[in-house]
Each structure stands twice: as C-alpha cells, then as structure tokens.
Image (tube, rainbow over the protein chains, first blue to last red):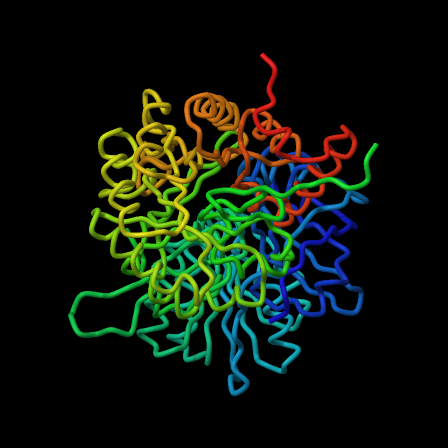
Length: 272
Length: 309
C-alpha cells in the first residue's frame, strides 16, 4: 500500500449521470499509480471550513495511463452538495489513497460483483482490474428505479456480463439484486469470490448467500468518518474476533478507514 | 522589525520548542500523522487517552458533523497502558519532542496504578508528563464525574500528586457551572498546569427515525463552534489560578491560536482541526512566528495573557 498523501487535485470534468448522482474526473498523477480498487479519497468539499469535516468517497475508476481517477457520488448532505457545485478547473484538497482494497485472489477464475445504489461507486475499478487479470466477471446492479441505475455501460465495456434489478421493475428484473445473485447460483454459475458494496441490509443478505454457497465474500463498508487516517477511531465497525471460548460472538471495533473499508463478509457483525 | 523571535514555552516544567501541542484523541498515537507532520517541529504530542486495561469503546456511529463542529462519542477506545509502553512509545525515541500521556480511569485506584506504571517507565520511554483526563463526557464511569465537582477534583488530583513526580496537567470539562472553582481545586491539589476545555456535551436527532444520530445518544462537541466558550473559560481561569494554562477549543487557524494566547494560554492544543487539515499544527506554528516578528514581539511569553480590558 502506498502512503496517504495530502494533495490538491484538479477537477477535469463533472457530469450529473443520474438525478443527484455525479461523476467527477480528477487529475491525480501523484496517487493514481499506487491506487487500488476499493480504496477511497477523503475530500474537503468546500473551500472554507464549512462544512468542517472531509467526505470519504470511493475511487470509481483508476486510469494509470492518463494519471486520472474518477469519483462517483450521490448528493446526500451539505458536503456532497458543495462538491457537486465544484466545477472543472477547480482544485480539490484530498487525502488519499486510503484503505485496504478488494483482494482478488490469483487463483480465482470467476468473480461476482454486486452493487446496490451508489454502492457501485468502488466497483467499476474492481471490475476493470478483474477483467484485466483475465477473470470471468459478472456484475449485478441494484437500484430503486431505472434512472438510478448507474455504471452499467462502463461495466459492460470492461468485458463483464451485467444484470440489473430495480425495486419498481422500471428496468430489467423487478426485485432485489440479491434475488439475481441467488438465481445465478441456482443456475450453477458459482463464483470463486463475491464482492459487494451497497446498503447494509443488501450486504448482509449477500454474506448469508455466500456463506450458504461456500463462496468467499468481501464487502466494502461505510461509516461516519472524521480523520480518515486511522487516528480518531470514529469510523469503527464490529469485526468478529478469533476467540471462540464461548458461544457468544466476540468482536472488536476496527476502523473502516484504514483497517477497511473492505472486510471479509464472514467477519462482519451486523447490528440490527 | 526583528528577525529572531522566541517561541519557547515551559509548561509544568516541560520545555517546549513552541506552544503548539496536539489534543488527546485527535492525533492518535502520533505515528498516524507522521506522513504529514514532522513530529520534531511540534511543541509536544499528547497521545490518545489511555487506561490501565484496553478499552473497546462505544458502538458506532461515534461521530457526527454539526454546524461548525462535530460530536464524538468514541468512549476512550484504546490499547491499554501495557501495549502503549511496548508498542507505541518506542516510536518516539527518534524524535526530540516531549510526549505527554493523557490518562483516564473508572476509579481512583486505576488512575493511581496507571500513574505509577507510567512513572516507572517514564525515563526509559521518555514520558514527559501526564495529562489527567477528568473530563471525558463519553464514558459511564469516572471521566467527567471527577471534573464536575470541586471536591472530587481535589481528591483525585491530590491522590495522583502523591504517587508521582511527573509533571501533572489536569484537563478540565466545560460542562460545569463555574469552571474557576474546579480550576482552583486542581491547583490546590497540586496540578502543575491546567488544560481546557474538553468537549461540551451535545446531541443530534434524526427526524426520520426519531433516534439520536450517535449510538451513545450524547457526545462531545468540538470544532470552531466551541471556540468562544473555550476562550471565555481560559480567560476566567487565567484570572483565577497561578499555574500555566493550556488552551483547547476549536482552533483551526493561527488567529484562533493567538486569541487563546492573548487570553492567557501559555500553550495550546490543536484538536478537531487535525482531522480537516493534517498539517494544521505546523501551519499554526509558522503563523505564530510570523505574527510575533511582524508585531516586533521578541518572546511569546510577552503575549500570554496580554489582553487589554
């Protein structure tokens, strides 16, 4: 893993790809070479100190040749709203690249990638890396409705087979993306690894499915974050510990920012 | 105009190259910030609060942004003193910056055992002093309970004083009716210096779920929002006690730090701003030096408490 840098990067392009969802291209030659799928950058959204804290956003795409990275984000609050108002040519103060990354095993032949909503953000980079390594890749995208299906075209272009589920049935399969995952397993397409990012209930279900099918599963978690470099212990999640003396599940808090954001699905303790 | 100026400060017998320290809990165990900050340039480093035994901390969400600030309810998650001694303190041997350990406990006995243990290793591990946390709002036992009552403050500080010769800084909570009374109790009990303020208690509600946004319900408010409160308390305490004051509270730029120094702080701790700008401590040190030169002040001590009323 390369060191986390605090740098200014230029916004090359910004596009609203779906209602309130933005794709932003950044010139970041200093960090692109060491950046890995699953990592994120911690962005100061405003030029002054309001809102105060940085916002952690997944690296959506890594273009080593051009020295560019992309982020894909949804406007959910004041920080992302300000970020969406930044324009091409502006400089952004970022920390990155941060976090571990998705671990694609060399021996894996078939990769299943599942994204829900804005959870597809870190998955394009993963998909492109997986196909680059010669893996057979399938991607399942879940969204509330047709307009919110994002990344489908780019993912297909990378060489992966894509299926989509929408909650309201306005596009392709009507239902949950986890239904598609179960369906593909029933049909006998067994991946060597499943990677997932999206709402908690979706990831939880995917972990259950992966455990039943004995497929290794990695999930990318999200938590409210302050420093982003492992110092403040604000962004923790519950991770099972090895101690099995008692029946009770033992856990400890791990930092999403630098111990994650990617964790083994089987190790995550999901709170109700 | 002068070209040389003196930024040196002395707190509780600890000699500082400059008055800028890192606030406990916002600078991890120091190493996390080494990619951004030359640790040798800091006045002192105050480490993440430590307890006798490791502490797991509170469930998430632990942090939430608020207008010009943030709430945290980490719950003193830490590795415990033995791991601190074995794995964290050796890192600082290559630096010449004083390392101050922030200590917490559920009971007086825990504070005392922790103090003794750190005293034993202080020479070998380079522990410059202790900051006694009697002001953590996010733990059920101990913590702030000590710092909201003058008698309890006196009791715990005097007990710790009896078992150590290490410099003692007592960190005060703003969640009190009159901070001057608590400050006096700490001074009488033998504190060498006071640091203030710790966080103010607060809460954020999610109107959709009607639940608090922090799992712990309440948390400690920090950041620019608390700065005026902190300044006022520093000024009040400055007029009350004779021991040095370390100002803490929402400083994010050099002007903020200067306000605290003028109001009576001999040194300052930078907290939440580290999360926003990991190099902020260095920028503030450079800014203070520039201010002193521009204002023809040869020695920073001349600025401490120089507020004109």
